[in-house]
Length: 600
Image (cartoon, rainbow, N blue to C red; front, side, top):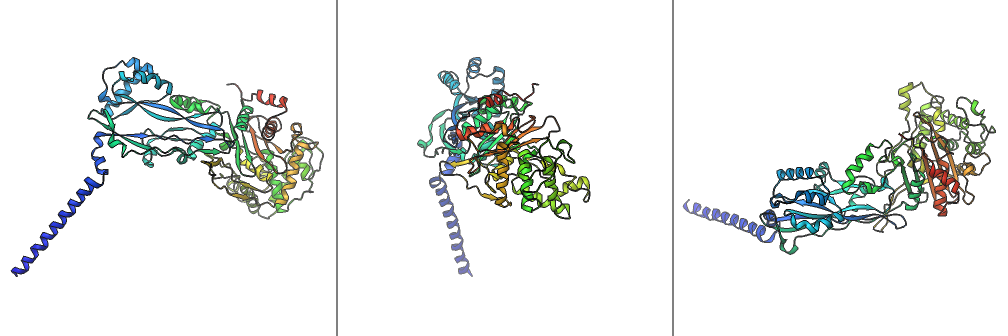
């Protein structure tokens, strides 16, 4: 028994030796091998300074610089190091009210006396230059460099977007960001934030107990360099964009132009707009407040988010569905009694009865009401017929977003059967009840982007690429946007295209006054009824007729008939893009001098 217990003591001793060895080994790893613990222990004598990278540049489709970076500077303060100084002089140098400055300094002292805090953000390089010469007079204050955006052209504000300081919710959600960091708030700056932002670097600086800098920690061994953000080339044509914004000055509305062969958005005009440089630097907050209070809503992106009835432009959709479903043929004729027609009157008198080609040329309301009626009566159950019609409409990109890189895009509205069941009862509605849909009025709502994509499908004779804004990242090509085919047989599009061509070239064409002799343009007028005032002028078009290079939609709010304002704007845009210049100064002068915004 004694020998047995004697053996056990060696086991216990062995266990203690093993545990001791493990502790010694762990301490050796912590103190000698792994330097992370050393850095953590020395946090009280090391100041970690974020090195902000240059944000990626943005170029237009032809390589012209749109967005670049400029240096800005934050004035930092460490309260414990502050000595008596001329407060009024410093405030004068940085352009801050003395009372506000004193209040900020007091608040910073209450937060921490030894930590560095920002007391004034985003000083310009000019202000920084003046300050540097006299900074030695103000112990405890120093400057940290920042990067701010600058815009080469005062255009495309909604598309490019802007950057701003992160909020607390973002900091909690994404560990990459820290208080005081900047990120994309809207537009392409937000969509491609991860590509544009780059990667922050870190610099560790030795400081004494009073937070005074003593040099680089371990000669920069643990510093990391900032990685510059990636450059973007976008699909926008800066000349076309600028010209579109000129044409839309003093008007409310939008222009969306797309390259049919690729889905690349050539311009995205929303009017009224603003100079993107207004939302940069120290003036950003004040200017944003002014823009937000403006009754003309310049911050609202009408090109992507505004919705309108498509008006007569939608007649082409109903014609295509009727051809596909076989409820009408190209030679189908319907009567028209002009303004005396029932249940939908025509906007003007013209020869009748017309076939489909002629009806497109003159935009005959009764013809397309009867066309729509033929679709709705194809099946015995109105619900079944309506769902067939609705599916075709959705297939053309209406009623939903495109889910590409377009920021804050609206969906529009294509009603379901349930919508009408709710208001009229399951058996209480029929084609006559919803007849306004036949001419693009009533419950249907679309965005200008959807209208531009719609005419792109017609230009391509039955397909489209998802509309998008990115062309390449660092010159390496963008996302491969998919091709989508319409559920309409391509053979039916030629008739529609010819009808749109006759809108300009036909003797009764609704836009014949704005044809351009050197170009084969196909278009369709539209006037969207507006319950709050004068109707909206709408026009869709593409050119050339064969192998189209541009398709676009123009909406001018409260401007009346589509041929009055939207049509000439459309043809000027096409002429500018395809020919490089316009040769109709009388049209251009009328549009640019036109002021359709009532004075308050």
